[in-house]
Image 1 (cartoon, rainbow, N blue to C red):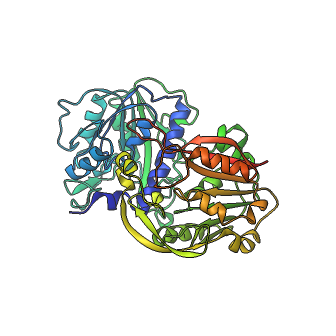
Image 2 (spheres, helix red, strand yellow):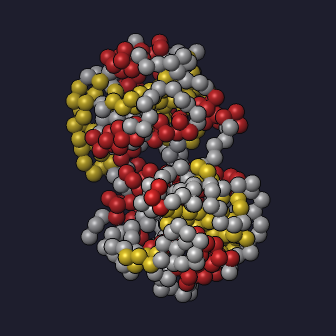
Length: 456
């Protein structure tokens, strides 16, 4: 049997989920909807990669999934929430309570009976239904059944799915909800088209997806339209001057160079581009699989230079512990309490990688710098201090340092936040902004904080 983690945590899935959840957060913001205290029914939850989004925002989540192996992973990750098997193709919904919010992302197109599923979901929804699904182009009212591999833990259990048209979905939702909307902007991912009228010969995506919101009361959001939209835009971005907190500072500061240390697959570089940074980025990533994704992403951006190495206190070959969640991989052993809080951080392998000192590569890296301050971003899972110790000479050319700091020991032997702040002050950098990082979704305890330091 295929381990569902290997499917749901592939590079493509992680990038897709990031785009969808970023989009969802902006939908909620535009609606003025605070999920805190709301009940959420999440259907087709997979292994729970979206569950934490709602828990982090204070919602009470019930997660359902038709596959027992997927449900087992959900129960390992979120043991305190209500979760049970639910096959939307066959269930009558008996025993399923009503919820304020029904969340159905990535499930409808895996069903043979989407009509019955939408009827059931509407019956269990007292306020809002959020629906994302693969669709077909065209304005016909069609379901368009397709075959899917039933052995794949992310595909249809029946062996048949569907690719309904957006018009079919809209008309079906209107049977049950007085208000149905499409947002004017799509997630920032190639599977979400923005021009639905383009000729078939010009379409590049393998799958086409769309998002719908159905409501029991009208939604006053400028980006919501009560009809099927043939022209949409990519995800809208807040004006830099309007962004609050840490992101606002990053957006307003016109950096001449960004050093992305612990780049993984390039998530931070993509974030900086989204915040408006147009200058060069030097991205450092040691692990082969993550670096391959990083390098592929950088091919579309001439100002991103990927480096296949880690940065540390000395030049060496060093073994790195690879986590099931690639971004949690570290040179340090992970604490048992960390794995208990998030099982996907457990070590699944090791790899010997190259480590270099920033001082040794600085001349080449800084040769691309433009006018403006320099930002050093550190996300090296407990070895941030080691990176700085190998950058003693280079620190004088760095203006800002964005570093992940731990309140609770996540990796064995890592310096905790008090020590890290004191050490940074001794080097002439003071904390000026911070943002909550990773928290335990069950207890709410914060493990890590991202702190922005500025040269005094």
